[in-house]
Length: 198
Length: 258
Picture 1 (cartoon, each protein chain N blue to C red):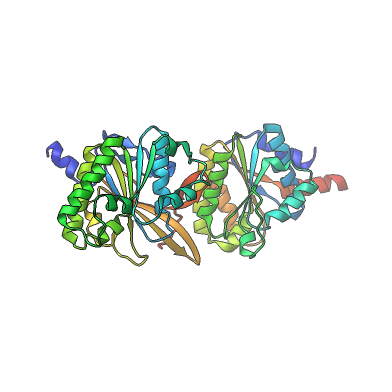
Picture 2 (cartoon, each protein chain N blue to C red):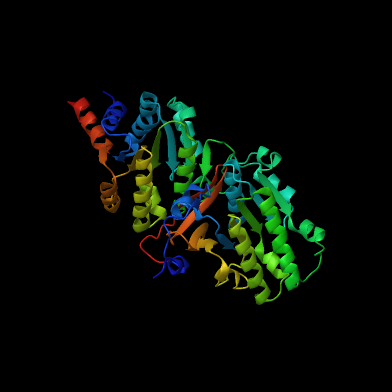
C-alpha cells in the first residue's frame, strides 16, 4: 500500500469532525497532498480548503496540477502572497489574508468558504511551523483551539501539517492537546525505506 | 423588587422579550438571539469600521424576512448607497421594487418639511420626530436605520435638544414596535461612544465598532457594550465584510492584554 493510501485509510477510520496532526518531512509532503487533496476528497466527496502559510497558493497549484489533483474541489486561503507585494491574482478559488499574523482573518475566510460550500469540508493547514514563525505560541494555541472546535461543529475534517524539527516540541505539545489523532508520516516513510532495503 | 424596576435595571435581562434577529449570525449569537424588539441602538465607530454596511445588512435581512425596513440617509446619496450594495449576495433589488426596503434622503425630507436651515429649534425637533413616526406608521416599518444621527445632532447644537430629540424619537419608534439603529460617528481617539456624549446615555444599546492595530495589522472589531433587555457578550470580535455579509470571530488575546 502506498503512503498516501495508508494516510487516507487512517483518516477514514476517524469521524468527519476529527482534527488530525500530520507529522511529516519534505519527502512526505507530496504524499500528504495526494492523500488530503485528491484521494480522500474523491472517496468521501469532500471540498477542500487549503490554508497556506508557507508557500504562495500559485506555487501549490502548480504542484497539485502535476499530481493531477481535481482543482475544482480545492479552495485556497493564501496568507503569504500579500506580504510578497504584487503576487496576488483575481482567481476566485483564492482568498487572500494580508499576513499570517492575522489569525482571526484566517478563521473568517474558513467560515466564509465553509458557508459557501454545499459539500462536507476538509481543511488542511500547511503548516504549524510556518505559522509559528509569525505568531507566539499562546495566540497560536488559542487560534487552533477555536478553529478546530468550530470545524468540529461543522463536521469538517481538520488536518494540520507540521514538521518535527528541532525547537518544534511546543508545537507538538499544542497539537497533542487539540487534535484527536496524529499520523506520523515521517515514520511511515522511514519504515517503507527500511522495508525496501530489507 | 417589582417587575417594573427589574426591567429598568441595566444588566438584568428579561429573557422573555421578543428578539429582532439581525440576520448577522455572529451578532445574533453575541446578543443571545438578536436585539430586543423596540430597542433603539447606537452603532458607533470611526470611519471605515463597517457601520453603514452592517446597518444595511440588518435592514436587508429584515426586508427579506417580511419586515418592512427603512434607511434614512443623512449624508450619503441613497442611489450611491444602493450601488455599493449590489456586490453583496444577500441583497435583492426586488426588495426595493416591492417596497419592503425603503431608502430616504434626509435632506429631501428636510426640504419638504420646510426645515432647510442650519440650526433646528425645539419645535423643529417635534416636526422631524413626527415626520419619521408618520412614515414608520404608514409603511408599517419594523426596522429603521438613521445614518448618521451625529449629522442630525449637528444641527441641534445643544445637549438639551439632542437629548430631547433622541428621547422623543426612541419613544415614538419603540411605541410603533420598530427596532432602530442610530449610526454614530466618532473620531478614532474618542474616549466615549458618541460625539456629544448624550446619545450613548439615552440609547437602549451600544454597539462599538473600531479599528484595532496589532503589530502593524489593522483589524476591524465589534463589541456590544450595552443592550437592555438581553444578556450578551461584552467581548471584542473581529469582523470582515464578505460577499455573503458580515462575518465575526472572537478576537484572539494570546494570553496578553491589548
